[in-house]
Image (cartoon, rainbow, N blue to C red):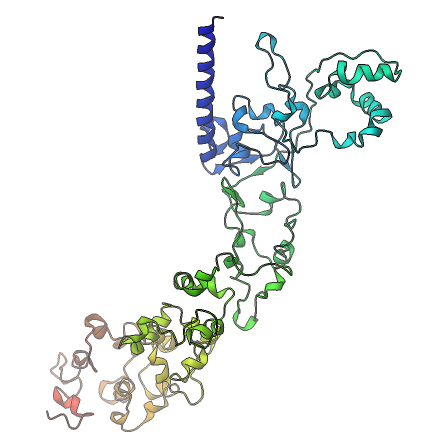
Length: 540
């Protein structure tokens, strides 16, 4: 071959390697190949532990970067081996029983140090090209070297044959002279290593679906001990959670590994149960730090710098208050925000948000609290709310089960926050949806409805109902709730036009002063007469 043709061949090889590298990166990034590869389906990639090893099926669902291998003492990069099929080195899936299955050195020597006719060595066999300077090249079973050089190494050579010795040793320099000096009666060994790769047992075919719901079948093949957690950071046991019938996807909504690395539940997801009061059942799980973190663990996050504590924390607290509340309760915040703390940088006076300084804040804050806008609990507790409200604020977790006003507290106290009464009425009046509008239907919950005359009742809503209790004598039957209410809490006419007034008289005048088809008055008190029944001094 001429020199020019040799350069051309090298260029072709370089282009082929570059194209292979591009293909490798694309495959790693997507985790899928063409449909005919069988590595992915419409449901996503499938890891088959018994299938031939390919980067697209077994590797890329968890490893985006298959380049440099991070193993102590080894210098290796998959990128230098792109033109070799994966199963050329990996005869089986590399992960099993909680450990990574390293490729035996004999597999490396299938190419390294092997001369391929006139092309020369396929790959170098120099130790320092693959191993770091600090790596101990003497195998563990060869130590101590002084005792191994005698009978021990002879027994190893007898069991495995001398061919394996030739991976590292040159017979003419390391073996034959020593044998002659010691009078060992053995023929001279040849300076040759025959590449022989032993057949390795294949694992059973277990299919793992990274895009499917998380379950034990996805984990136990590689992690037989799920609680083998790096000590010093976390105290955790899956068994405690499995005994309470928690599904795996409750904490692991997605597969535990991605191409970018492992996916671990964050601490905020733990607090969905830890520290949660589940109404009458009490605490779901403890929120004590020492139950999940060992002694000596640094509980303060790294992002809590002096600048963060002095001023930066307000942005995080405003955008993600649940992050702060994992560790900090109201009293912790109040010490600074109410000017009680002596900490460096703490304000000398109470910190009052700008929204609280607006004129309409007092009227609006109840509605905003119900809508869960803002983080009232950062500064306010029940005691601060009770300065104005007589009802326990914020309401306890099981409040909705029996939320009648406390003794001595008027139901009007509820109206301060619960300005939209339709939701309340739809629930409270559900049992009387088809009831007759008579005293017996109402006075059980509204005793003031029995007051006589009904026009003297101060609550206009109850007064409006009470004056219609005794219409059966003239009408022939009592009214029913659904005669005026399409849904409870708001009349059909009022809900349609939303007039902001004390009474929607258009609804009233559908009967008062109107006549039926026989020209008989349906109800008395037309026009101003209806108003004057209750309002004596209107100047009308």
